[in-house]
Length: 111
Length: 114
Image 1 (cartoon, rainbow over the protein chains, first blue to last red):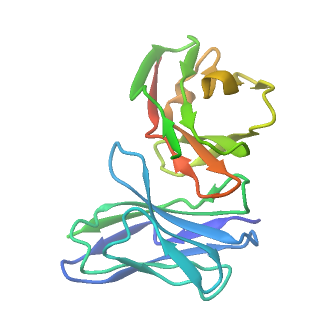
Image 2 (cartoon, chains in turn yellow, blue):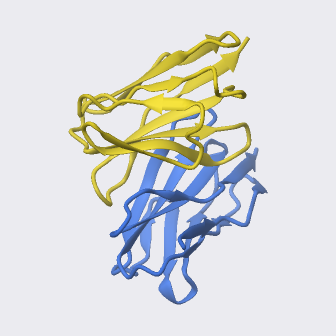
Image 3 (cartoon, chains in turn brown, green):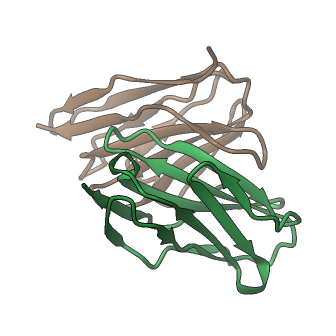
């Protein structure tokens, strides 16, 4: 079945630690996105990529990094520079101007 | 500038009532696309509908219907005979031909009481 897989579902990070969230899609979509969602809030764009080896900052990129070495994969690293990383992270992919498909999300908690 | 406004932060109704979720958008592009998504408590966003700017026909899918009006820049979503399972956060979104990033509304939390 085609879709987007995010892992892990739950992730715990210690202060000062970098962690990487995985996002893989087998939909052959060109564009991929990372969003952050805080409790009771909407979606905020962190990074997006429209083609392999290219990506752009979204509205809240500080403290995050990404790579797009393969069309299928768009991992997100939450660095120690992100001072308040506890949130729900959603990955999405899309073909231009069609609906975006979302993964199940990763809940990141700082411990 | 492109913007999506969902003015209703939270709506609470009793089961079997009809409920309408409002979505107002802003864009200068003539070609654009509007979307509705549902986010149940599990968190995953579920796609409900896409509508392009050249198609103003209303859409009905079971208990769900959508009213697209370019004259008022609105794309409202109505649930008829609501059910408890409809409880979720609903998001409206916009993309344009020139910039196909999705612009999201803040979401409306819908609570259906039994």
